[in-house]
Image (cartoon, rainbow, N blue to C red; front, side):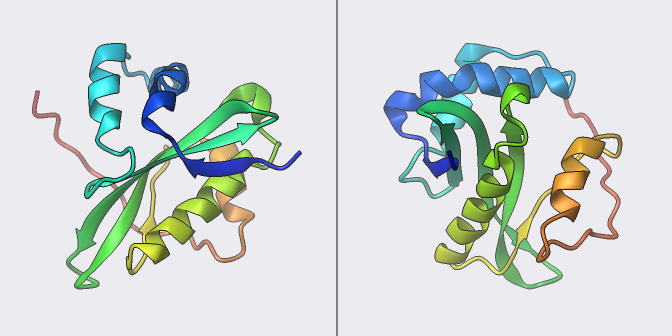
Length: 150
């Protein structure tokens, strides 16, 4: 069965928290359900900050994508940043990841954004294989840097 992708409703956010926590653990972050509930609530439709999409396969939430509405100085345009993309390990290969990417692009296009961008860890080869398999996706030549301010 194909993945059904749509915005996560407010009453479904609790169902998404275990997936969000699993995603955070994958990136060696320490999940906190209360903090996650408050943070991800801001992306539930309607939101001026972005969009939280979910992917359901056979009625089960198996993945999510969080899109932030942001800006690009080099493009001088509004863009969407797919800050999070995660599919439960037992649902990988179901088409949920690809469907989330396509739905994120459609949501960004509908919001009038000029582009959809995202990042992944350099050692996340599984994700890179998915991204590289989508014809309209091109790999960026940018490196990411950060300063932890906490």
